[in-house]
Length: 112
Image (cartoon, rainbow, N blue to C red; front, top):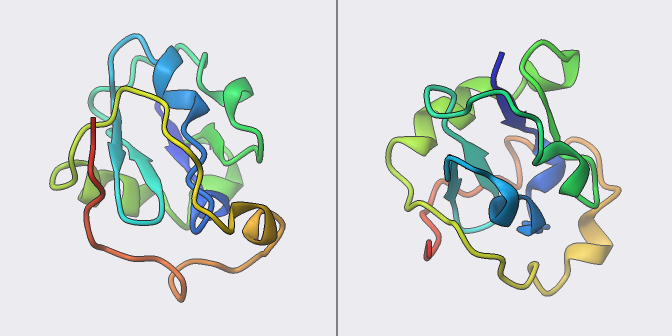
């Protein structure tokens, strides 16, 4: 089962996870990341790297809300393989619930 980036990542976009991914399956949006489910090898090394616990297995109930978002945007956003700074106000958003879809941006990020 692949891993999924949940709504917790929205408006935070910590990228600690992308550096440890052995298959480079992370894709960058303007204010969040997604995992390409067909590229993820289910190794799980990314999950403990996320400082806000925004990465879960697709079998976790927290994944249901954003699993399709991950699939849809992984096909159109640029790949990201290097760590970048989190968004400037990430600390103030990390504990906010209900960010998807209201605070989600479908615009692509810069990738790396």
